Image (cartoon, rainbow, N blue to C red; front, side, top):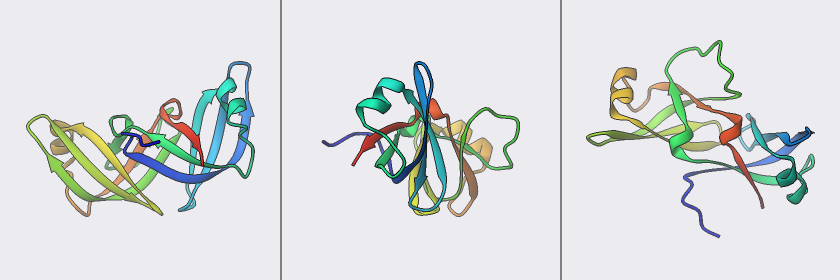
Length: 139
């Protein structure tokens, strides 16, 4: 199956915490970072997720936010430090490639946001993704 989702990060499940309706799943990416996904408990059961399960963490580029400084006081669980490797701007939107340890992410943000942040190739950033915006696919 091919997907239009730009960010497909390989990793391994380290923990599954089931709740009544939802489960949180922690995934260790190939670069050593942890990503948390909040998915339905039914989905976790259907995928038979358990520690050691190989998965891809899937995140649409429109769900990746960027910060240029230290991030505090946010409920966003996934914070991946990286470096801008490419920047494409149009009249309204910008596509930003970010190298994080062992992976590359794409963030689709407004051009105004890219300008306000002063983004340029080589700039350090933190990619932010809510756990509810991370989907998982078994390999």
